[in-house]
Length: 437
Image 1 (tube, rainbow, N blue to C red):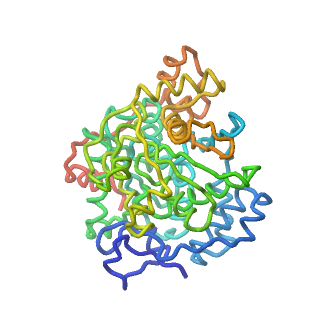
Image 2 (image 1 turned 60 degrees about the vertical axis):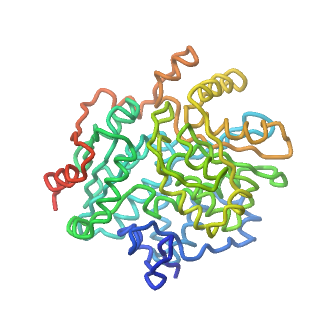
Image 3 (image 1 turned 60 degrees about the horizontal axis):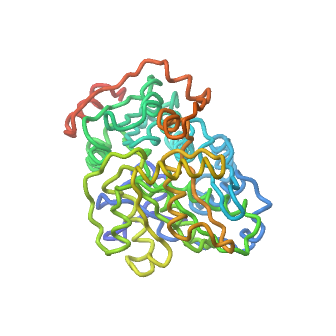
């Protein structure tokens, strides 16, 4: 059975089962967990992958990591109930594809991980109340809120930076109520993430309130993202060409999943880590120095992360070998002005609307090869629906876009949040005051 270990492997003798890793997502040294072994995918499965549908691919890949931790037919039910919306590989040009990951209930790619994790936690820990604590820079919060809403025996606390997420994103996570509690922080996402990590390191507190997280700190949030890389590959018709994938990157969970898929044997030539001006990772790829810094506010707010915690998982997956990392990953950063220009360009040339995050994914491809090499399948991930940024898109493109019904239903609801400062004690007090445990 596959076990999960700390990234630094300081405690080689401490290994966690899948259930332990989900419910206690940090290792004994308070570091992130990764699978002890990344199994190579069966070649026959890859050669016949076109014949499998989305849920079948998710079931096959997930079962490799869970390795019997959840019985096969129970896992199948979890996947069918959580991964129940489509993924599209939209062809924009002869060799240019947009992988649309935003067709879930909150119109963001985070729906995959959040819904899967919610069903997993409900299955693994259905005999007691579980407290979910998460930090969001935008889409994580709305996806977690939707995924866990009214889920039996769960209470959710969502930390988000005040005035630093879009209007619709805020409405999505502050209007459900019931078991969902929005905590509005007078700070940045990095402040929210620091408080989250501080909570998870407090073993007395986590044990008392049965605390885990729905952030990508939790390895179960990453696993569904590994699966959809394989599904993207299954949709490519000409697999004789090299494949380059550009990922809009903030906290780097999505890229981590891609590298895990690569390590399993998925034939990807190059990954592009496309970031906004929060460029800690592109700088690392150029210099070898990973230096976190204060995040800067941009129009691609879900990527405004100055200390991307998941990238250490990627470094670990390459055994801390920078040269090997650079063979597989290129990193580029882009300004808001460049992001806006790309939105306008893609709309004019392809009649396709990008949100600011997906625009950066497109820019990464363009920077890598100018999208002119027809011997390459160029794919960029679209991580959020443009309607979540209606005011910006209307202004950039001089159009009036429609907002889907699933977003409209939250706009006129009353926002409810608890405002706190960046002191972790303020957050702990909020948990103690509201918790039903």
